[in-house]
Length: 176
Ligand code: 3AM
Image (tube, rainbow, N blue to C red):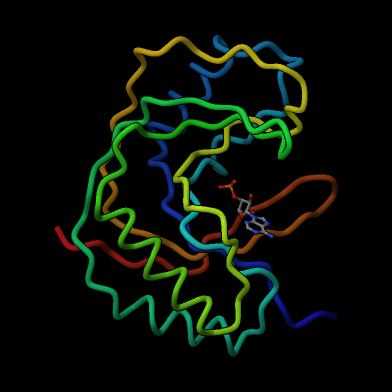
């Protein structure tokens, strides 16, 4: 049995907003647009770590526990489609500095611990649909999903019986 897990740091979307987003998504996108992500799996990835050992995971959790980052809010008011990745996403036109700082810190700690980090610029987003490789009609601008983030978390990602399951392993508060 493998003793590594596929892990990532993320900001969970609060459950109430997850439920509202899923309802809104059903009105905005046709069934052919792509595969909807389950409400409980909606999140903003901060740093993807890959398949890592328990030892490395512990070291990264110890570093995460020392982060002192003020809480922040953001407005999900932007939508886009990455056809290559087959992803339809929601994002924000004004990423809060606190979010960018937190992601930068986690990504640099991950890189220093030997976790490959994509050279592409960090684009905070909530993946709404996967498998969206054809043209998609995006929601008209004017929508706003305000969210207050009060903690960030470490998740494992496991593909089992045809489904991706995310499990929260640990969480750390942002300073309020
Ligand atoms: O849902 P999003 O896009 O925020 O795309 C994967 C998902 O992010 C991303 O990690 C999150 C949890 O699976 N991911 C998966 N493989 C990746 C990789 N090799 C990756 N991000 C960067 N590099």
